[in-house]
Length: 295
Figure (tube, rainbow, N blue to C red):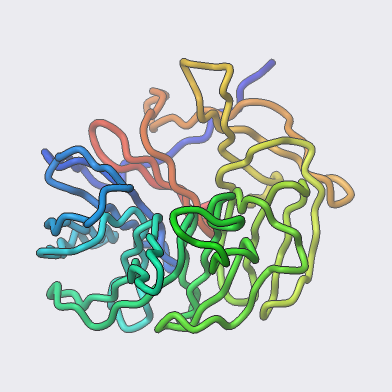
């Protein structure tokens, strides 16, 4: 089977001695990287040890660094609000009786805490749209309850919150067991796929506007382009490439896998590393730098 090749340009040379923990593309195409000082992370450790975290904000004009000191969270998700303030979120959230962790924290760019609130346990995705609405997708433990939660906040599977964590909308109509993938382009283009149902849904102003059937299992992230859709899936049977990129065609609102897709640089060399997709933006964090393409 022929492998489609997609060329990315070197966006910036980048290397660090810190440990990569997570990353996210913001709504305007900025790339965020969450880094720690390299110690082993146990997301179930309680109490959570206060640690320092580094957030890299990577734009076309350069890299800005935000240092967060003595943070009582292990953040794996991050995004930016309209005013430039930073949201970090810890994916696990302990509920011990009436004591509930505040696993979301908002900081200014000087690293000063503005607000802390709770988004619940079992978080797989966090993305902020242009109205400062926080879209949160949950995996199965966040939906059905674990870590002390008998009535989990994430039972709807996908929830929209206000800037300070007040619930605005929930996806209870979709019977979501696990929110596999989320791509928030804007408040009028919120795409998500989920288990048990294998559909990809588009929301516009929190109402369903489009629905696609997916002839594939386990799409972890995706984006649309002129040819259809590209996505990254989990392939548990391939130890060499557990997260392959796949080309999908769209016919009659059905998303059909057509073959593998390879990300290469301008010299034709394959780029390997962490992949990020959101809206029209595709990044790869490789060994010798960060590559980017706007589709």
